[in-house]
Amino acid sequence: MIPQSELKLRIEDLTANFQNQVADQEISPLERAYKTWSFQEPDRLLGSFAVFSPLSLGVTEISTRDYYTDPWGFYYIQAMSVVKFGNETPLMYGDPYNIEIEAMGGIVKYPEDSTPHLGEPLLSEAGELGKLSIPNPERDGRMPMILELSRMHKTYLGSMVFAPVSCSGPFSLAVGLRGYKQILKDIRQDPSFVHELLEFCCRVVITYGSALREAHNASPTLQEAWSCLPNVSPKIFHEFCLPYISRCVEALRNPNTGMTGTVFHGYGISLAPDWHTFLRTVCASGLSAIPLMEEDISGLRGYGTIDVTEYKQICAAQKVVVMSFLHTDTISAGPPDRIRSLVLDMFKKAGSGGGYTASTTWPIEAPIENMQAFINAFRECRYPIAEKLA
Image 1 (tube, rainbow, N blue to C red):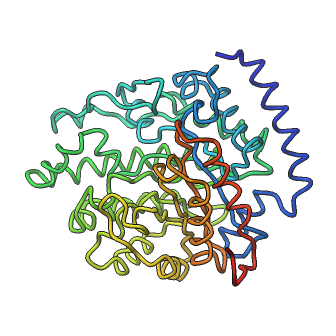
Image 2: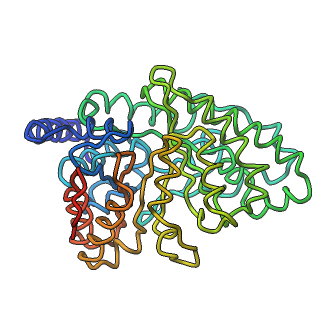
C-alpha cells in the first residue's frame, strides 16, 4: 500500500491540476451537474463512469482490500478518474450492498480481481432477527470510512465535481441479510416475517442514510437492484418493495434543497406487463433520478425493448432525471465506433430539456480505447442538440 503521506500529496497534485482544467472550461462539472439535475440544458451532456477497482485504471500498487478499506487509497483512485480520464461524477462509495451488513457483523471477502462480496447470510433463521441491532454510522464497520470520504471530497474536488454517496435500499438489504432464494420462500410461507424484516431494514437504511446526508449535504443513492424485474414479480414489487423504498426516499430527503436521492431501480422496466404504467409508478415514489439500462433499450440478455424518448418524457413529467447506462459487455467488446454511436443516439432521443446523463462502469478488462470512445462521445454531445449528430 502506498503510504498515506504519499497519497495525500498525489491527491493535492490532482486537485491543483483539475483546478487548472476547470478554469479553461465553459462551466465546471459541478455547474453542469446542477443544470442537468434541475432540467436546464448545460453546455454539453454530463457523463460519468463507475470505478470499482484500481485495476480498471491500471493501478496495481493499491490492492482491492486497501482500496475498499482505506479512504486515502479509495479517494486517490476516484480523483484520478476525474482528473486524468474526465469522470464527471466520481463515486464516494464502492460496495454499498455490503456496508450495512458488515457493520452488523457480516463477513465481507475481498478477492483481488473483483469487487468485495458477502459471506453467509446473517439471518439463517427468521428468529435471529431480534439479535440484530441498528449499526452506529460513526463507529461500526466501514461506515466511518465512507463518512470520511465525504469530508475528504469537500477538502479536495468537492467545489468542482458532484460525487454521490450511497446506501443499500431496504429490499436489497433484506436480501443481503437473508439470501435471495430464502426471502422468496419467506414471501410465500411467512410474509409477516418479511414485512417485519423490511421494517427493520428501513430503520437501518434511514439511520445510515441520514448520517451520509448530513456529512455530504446530499441525499444518498438507494441501491435496489434486488427489487428490480425479473428478480421479483410486479406483484411482489408493489407489496414488498415499493412501499419501503418510498418511505426511505422521503425520510432521506435533503431539508436544505428539498431534493431526494437516486434509486438505482432501473433494471427490467421492459419486462413489466405495461412498462409505461410501471415506470410512472416508480417515478411517483419521490426519487430524483432513475437508471435506464442498455438491456432495456436493446433487448440484451433476454430483456425487452422500450422507447428511449417515451421513457424520458414519462420521467421528465415527474422531474425525474434519466441516467442511461451502457452495459459493461458493450464497453469491453467495443468497437469504439459502436460505443460512440450508442451514446450519440441516446442523447438525441433523451437529451433535450436537460434531466439526462450518460453513464457506464469501467470494467477491469476493457481496452482503454473503448472507454476513451465513451468519454469522447459524451463530450461531443452538445446543447442545443444538433438536428444531425452523426
